[in-house]
Amino acid sequence: MEKKYAIFTALIITLIIAGNYLFFYDFDSGREIVVVGRVMDGDTVELDDGRKIRLLNINTPEKGRAFSDEAFDFLKTLEGNSVELDAEGVDRYGRTLGRIYSDKYINLEIVRLGLAHKYLVDEKELGDFIKAEEEAIGNGWGIWQRSEFYGCLNVEINKYEEYVLIKDNCGLNFGGWNLKDESTKIYKMDNVREKEFKIYSAKKDDKDGEYYWGRGEAWNDDKDSIFITDANGLIVYYDSYGY
Image (tube, rainbow, N blue to C red; front, side, top):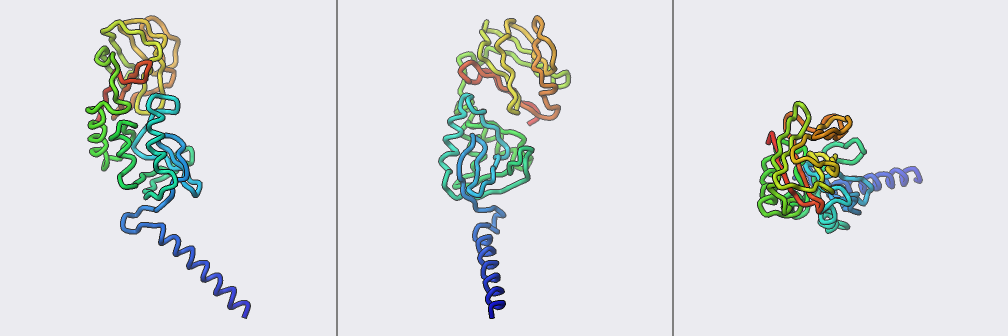
């Protein structure tokens, strides 16, 4: 009798677990229903089950940079709420890579609001992310707010010899200015003094008109973007290639 009861109990537990799985999985969309526990930064959240989700297709400003708080606050509105998760692999830090959907596609909405730029976007979604980014740029939202020095620079990227040629047309002071590519790596331009200079990706000692980032390679051969921001974090120059 006790054996039959144990088997019955085990069966009930199994059905409960299966029922919960069925309840929390949306078979129509292939997405999992999850709850956002807390926001870690502008493009990373932790679920209430402990999983960390890095949002695909985007890069938001790193903590402490201009507009990082705005990106964080936007995601913060999801805390404690159920969302749909489309998971796609794991990154080198052990975070699940994914797309999050609430009433909107959150990854895309962050770009449309100017709180992130597109990054390593899957080809099937690229058109949507380009359009969203163009809307944000056109409206000057978020990271696309223009500096008073916008238009002061002529910039050329030599992606094969790994340098950027910059010409200053306004006699600028580059203290507090930053240059970055699509990744999170940043070159601080504090030491620049010339009106025409090159910034190489390689690691060497700076000399007149030549500065070295020290990161090996920065510019992808197929597609990439360049961002130059002033001391207030406002955009001075932006361009992309390969899109």
